[in-house]
Image (tube, rainbow, N blue to C red; front, side, top):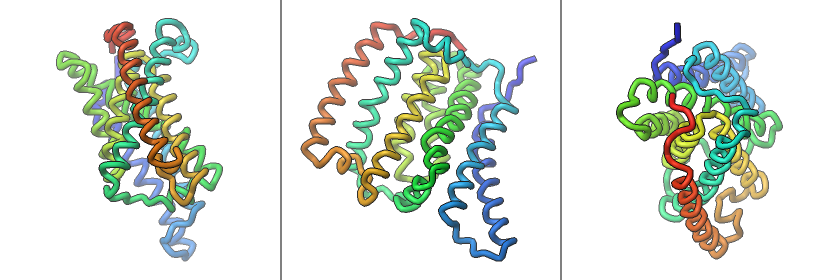
Amino acid sequence: MEKKNHWWVYILIFIISQMSAAAVTVTVRLVKGQAIDISEWAMTAMLFVANALAIALFFAFKPKSITWRSTAAALRTPVARRTALAFLLALPVICLVNIIQETFFPEIPDLVGEQTMLDIMRNPLGLITVAVIGPVAEELLFRGGVQTDLSRRYSQQGWFVPIAFSALAFSLVHMNPAQIPVAFILGCVLGFAYWWTGSLVAPILIHVFNNSFACLMAVLNPDDDSFTAFLGGKGPTIVTGLASLFLLVAILHFIRKEGLKPVENF
């Protein structure tokens, strides 16, 4: 008999894993008589444990109806073609979202802080966690868990409702105003990639690329990790924005030609 865990179980898993890791870190420091002020290594360990725990709990409660598709299957046509198109779709979206946020909404509060993330990414374990382990954990929970269950329960409402809701949940659990708009838009792209390809391979690849690119910007330019600074100023940013718009329209055209029906329904 199939496990029919509710979508909110996977959100709860994410929250519990984050809070548990934080609680363990703080408790250890208190037991040792240390201040609660978290060090670089403690933050890195906390982040790693939180995501590892989230992955473990997901497999303990994963829905049997999840569309896994092995990596080998995801490399076959037409899934391979759709995976490539979904990945290419994400590239201009990531560029445009960053440009729009930095240009029109630069004052959105960032509760995490640039220095905190830089401290984590200076640690090899932290870099791997942010760039790879974190994206895998979040895709398993929000696409593999939340979206899969919503798609099964509300299939009559259309394909966009589960995608939008899982993206909204994905953005809100970050609890950081600066990340919420970007996370929601990226979440919609990730949800579409999962639904359209019938595989978690596509959204995981996109998410890993997005986080790895953010790490690259931060490491190369720690004094200003903005997208504009990475590109070299406003001129190159405008050119990149226009090129991204052109690429977005072109990719959407190819996606339309491919067809909007999923490879395999949930």
